[in-house]
Length: 270
Image 1 (cartoon, rainbow, N blue to C red):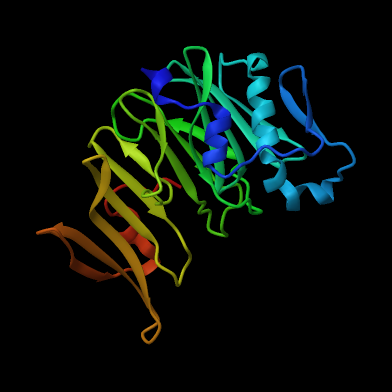
Image 2 (tube, one colour):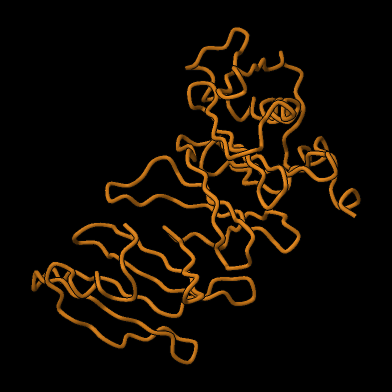
């Protein structure tokens, strides 16, 4: 069934608009299977990044060709060509899996079924300067299957980082979830809910949210957020709840030093 479902790697590259070029091929080598490095013929580091969209199909194909040399006994994060791309590999949900990130909007997921590598899903955006350095696995919905978060390597001054979710379905196949973009998501197993915590600074909103899963989507049911009144020079915390399918403000309180906010809904994750 999987063989019928998946198309070949070359075909999917064509569907994604990544054509096979005729330029001199990328040379790669592995150092003790721990540090993945890349060499280019007559290509300097300064030239590489502006042209990474031109070379990334070579990198992807080369990684898959050398995948037999990867160890899947535990998670590995490997940086290539002076951190210009990142590889994450592990045996996730008992399936060999590789993620390759060129930037926060250009990430590819490969899984191995029946000893064949398949490109499962991807963010095929134009490569930008922010690389998703951090990958971590977490069950985000309580189905006992691990999902994978890719975290932007560049955080804001207040510690926020763009989080990208590849969620596993019941067949252990990963899907990029473009509809889920909240910061710092975490599954609260005890209460069967998903929480998020965003911090933006003293005069910008700080927000905590509570979600539940409904039809495989996150539904916001409650939140608290801060508000700075420029006229009164005072901080407030506002508490919202979902009532009759609408998020309603139920309480607004003056909040000195965010004491009310910090105690509301759940303990801050950071």
